[in-house]
Length: 365
Image (cartoon, rainbow, N blue to C red; front, side, top):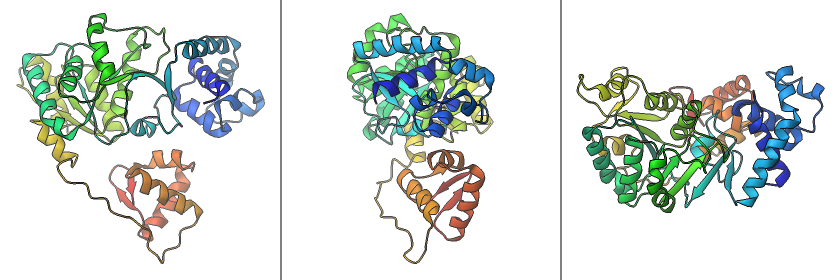
């Protein structure tokens, strides 16, 4: 990414009232982040959802100064980063509408794999949860998954350590800047995590671990993963938020059941009872549900020879062929089509027999 473009992306991150969804909307409309700040106020006002308050913040030179300082830090310290439109951005996270426009990372990371699972849960882990977590990762290790968690106390650090013990790649997602370690007691684990995967964050280097950051962090944990595992949770907790987010992304969620009287099993039991998570008794449940036990056979898919597709239909078909089953809203964003128009095109493609509708507004070829 060119320096001026990275500066513009950082400026968007620094601007209050500009969340990731609005930032992406602006970038896609104007083509680049840097072009946004070249536009006149009158042009910006024509965009739906971009009012005078947002424009005032957007054009405030104070946030440009903040962005310039962060840019200087990035270059001075060789900070690695990934932009949401880059090929090196985590593939599954890229399809989440509210994913960060920019993430920073450190370590030996390779997230270009389909076998990614998140393991989260209470910080007050019991022996029951600890024994299950370590056994689960030991059993699933033969499939070489990437293990993601939040580097926090309890279930998180247990998952990271078990992954390392089984020579699996693991990623810790921070709720603060990469040079602001939290909790500090986990400093002894940093080197092992960096050697077996890495650490990532959407926050600037000096951002401290504030409460709201942990909630934002959870969407990265859920978004990067094929499935999210809840090992233990009280009736309320951050792990349940992660489960909700994973469900909203149409990802699989699994929960370890416990006794109805166990405080740190109430959250998991409720997820299962309310059909918000699959019952988890062993690694085999996940392996079977994700079809990891079936030898993947590569099949060549091809549009029927005598079916004509127009330009937009071909674009959608090629996209689904390359990315697999996708949510309607995600297809609309990635193919740059309004949802109402896309819905009509998909109906025509369904009649032609080249796409299949799936539950939850999902489509595949």
